[in-house]
Each structure stands twice: as C-alpha cells, then as structure tokens.
Image 1: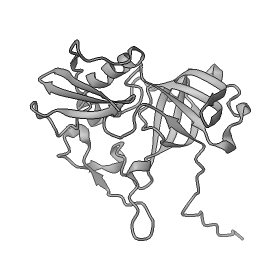
Image 2 (image 1 turned 90 degrees about the vertical axis):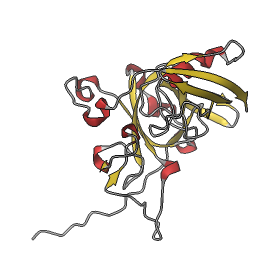
Image 3 (image 1 turned 180 degrees about the vertical axis):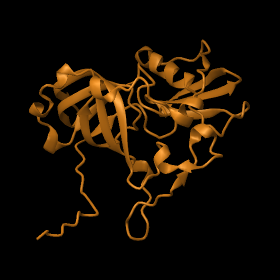
Image 4 (image 1 turned 45 degrees about the horizontal axis):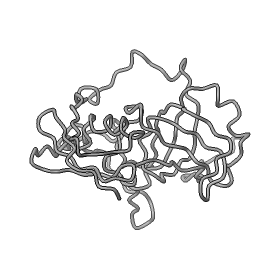
Length: 243
C-alpha cells in the first residue's frame, strides 16, 4: 500500500550572510555578475555561520556561486505571498517588449531568488571590522547591493558549470558595446576604486529606456554620488560629490 505524501508549499530559508559592497542603492549596480573584474565586495556571515571550518577546502576553488534574495523587489500581496507576473519587460530590450519571466533574469519572480558567479580574491578566516568578527570572502564581479541577504554559496565547478557552446538568446543580441569614459581633470576619485568605477561607467549604467543626451544622471558608489552625461558613445563624468 502506497502512502500519500504531499510536499510542503513553503520551504523556510536561513540568511547565512550579507554582502558588503560599494552600492548603497540599486541604481548603477551591474546588470549581471562577472562583468566588472575590478569591482570588489565581501561576503560576511551571520553569527550562526561565523565558523571557519565551514569554509574548509574553499581555497582550492577560483570562483563561487552566490544564491541571494532580491530583497528590494519583494512585493507581497494581501496574503503575504510574493506578487509575480508570467511576463516581464527586460530592461535590455528597452522595456518595450514582454517575454516570459522564466526566459529572463528579472528580479520580479515567483520567488525573489537570484544567483551570481563571482571570483574568489581572498579568504579571511578571522576578520575584525567594527561590529563584525568572523570569516570573510572577498570576491570580484558581484552585482549585489550593500546588505543584500545571501542564502547559500557553492563552489563553481568548471567541468560541470562551463558550457562553451551555450546560447544567450535575446540577452546576447541586446548586449551593448562599451562606452568611452572621460574624467575631467578637476574630478578626483580614490585611486584604489577608480578602475572599478571606469568599468562600471563603460557598461552604461543608465536604464535602457532612458537615452537623453541632455540629462545628467547620478548614482551612489564607494561613498560618492557620481554625476555623468552620455552623448553618443562617450560618457563624461561631470561631478563627484562625497556623501
């Protein structure tokens, strides 16, 4: 006799850590992970998971998968469930065309989960910084806002995760060329963060549906508000305001 078994409709997750990055807001964050090689951030763990042994063996890997929550895009309905739509408007297509949510990486999903592939730069088993005391993983290429909750990390396996013949669909076709970035001499920025900022600006942080050459755009990065304009393929930084 077969016993009936019903799987639960809700599975609880624990936040194992949070990202420490130079992005206090969503605007300006890279659209995908791995695009900005000079962009550094750090994975810091919640008290329960500040155990150095949990990272044993990770030093043998070069890259990492981060599984995280779109915490700024959760839209609960009257019952507390996350709202979602079967179709979304991908920014890379200018927000004018609808595609199936499961054919995109839209942040507005049935479950607000995301994943990012990043490079491991350093592993610190005991970091002391202000109120934080515990392990830390310094990574490059993360596309997460400061404080984003992380639910898991997994090592990247080249033999299984790399697919050289994979197709990129509409996302590959919509890939834009890099912009030339111009810094006026009067504009100063911390030299250790400059390469990351130039990479970020060259990827054109403007929304795909906003292309006004007269408009001055701005976003916060590394303790500054970065102001810029784009004319043709040239992005000019107009001002840097320390926050």
